Amino acid sequence: MSQNPFAALREPYSEDAVLVLDEIVRHAANHGASDIHLEPKLDHMRVRFRVDGAMVEHRSIATVIAPQVVSRVKVLARMDISERRIPQDGQLALEIGLPQRIHLRASTFPTTQGEKVVLRLLFAQSVLDFGHLGMNDHTQSRVREISSGPQGFIVTCGPTGSGKTSTLYAILRHLDTTEVNVVTLEDPIEVEIPGITQGQTNPRTGFTFAAGLRAILRQDPDVILVGEIRDAETAGIALQAALTGHLVMSTLHTSDTVETVVRLVDLGVEPWIIANALSAVLAQRLVRIVCPHCAETAKLEIDLWDDDEVLLPSGSEVVRPKGCGQCMRTGYKGRTGIFEFLEMDDELRELIKGKSSARPYREILKRRKIASLRRAGFEKVQQGLTTVDEVVRVTT
Image 1 (cartoon, rainbow, N blue to C red):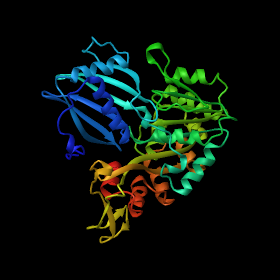
Image 2 (tube, one colour):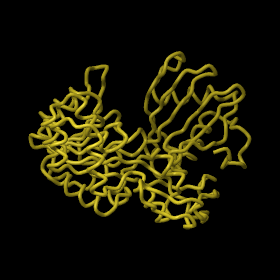
Image 3 (cartoon, rainbow, N blue to C red):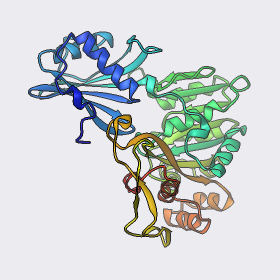
Image 4 (cartoon, rainbow, N blue to C red):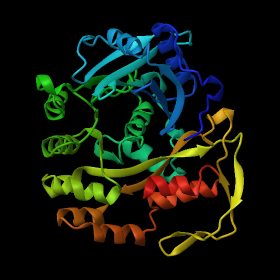
């Protein structure tokens, strides 16, 4: 990311702070950025965007007006403008000449050079259509069927920023919310979805995931989305709800489907409850799509393996990034998901009840030829959507 896509804009911003903030947010929104980083340095304020999961340099801000830009953010986000020693959070909205207002979540952090500000563009976090997540036809079909059932527990897993909540939002979107009562409990609410009831936790007031989930069960819900399973208490309530006639969906910060099942057991919930409640686990990652305007082809220099099978032999043609004005010189434009899907059945439930280690689960997945995340990623390489380097980066 050493190349600056705004090479023509090398001079730091030095205009009015109001205009500078509007201009930066406008550029970020137009390029599909999810976050804006304002980073104080000795002789300037560095500005970077997170686009498709990667950091991209933007035009910096002159030191003389940098504090004014930070103050502008803090005023709009209703933070304490005089407090610079502790982190603060807030929300703001800007009218900057685009078709709709840009809603942002702001976070400040004291550093040795001043306050760093990160702005999350909530406008950019729109709900994807279920069919555009990147799942193959079989996985799509099974997830649709399971999520249309009257009860069960669906978990998406992966590291931060892998699209777990976006997948759950997309599943909610295909439900008929006129016929079912959907209630969510999130931290924070990323996207407001019409037709459903969304709640946001507030630990300071005791409104935790566990407390909120108990309250939701008194709200006559059909479908419950819990932003994250963070402890045994929340897991236990969510799984019990799935056993008693509710469809429950949540996320876990685990690396793959097997680790998710083992983690649920390790949390201390009764294995028989997990075995009977858990319906399916979706492990996922996001890979960047090669920009169609500047993509090049190259030949593989080595065989591409998945376990003991060669997926692509050396000499096969694959795409590689180059970089152009359309993709901010990154070589990539947009992202798609890769998924590992595990649906529960009697054989797997017996392993759960016996508190099995990960090995027997992995043997079953291998025997059934369930595609791993890396294999799913290499299939995207074969389709010419992404690169080998991208798949290796997110599945290592």
